[in-house]
Length: 77
Image 1 (cartoon, rainbow, N blue to C red):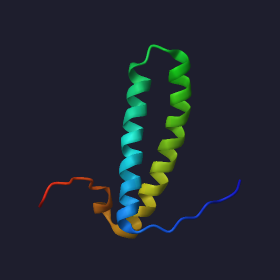
Image 2 (image 1 turned 135 degrees about the vertical axis):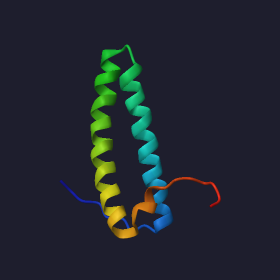
Image 3 (image 1 turned 120 degrees about the horizontal axis):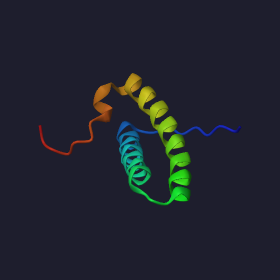
Image 4 (image 1 turned 180 degrees about the vertical axis):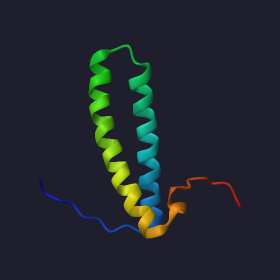
């Protein structure tokens, strides 16, 4: 399998992480609510891939930037 490397600023990485979290939630919701077995199977397979990617990126991101990288709140502190 070929590899793809990308250099990202912390702010860019945060956008990717937030997008992956949102995608994971939406896909999980489809799997939990759909009545279509084919849709559940297709989305479920993709959900596995998204979760594997999210876990890997999350782990590396937290090591590099700390737990706050996973805080997606836009509220002022």
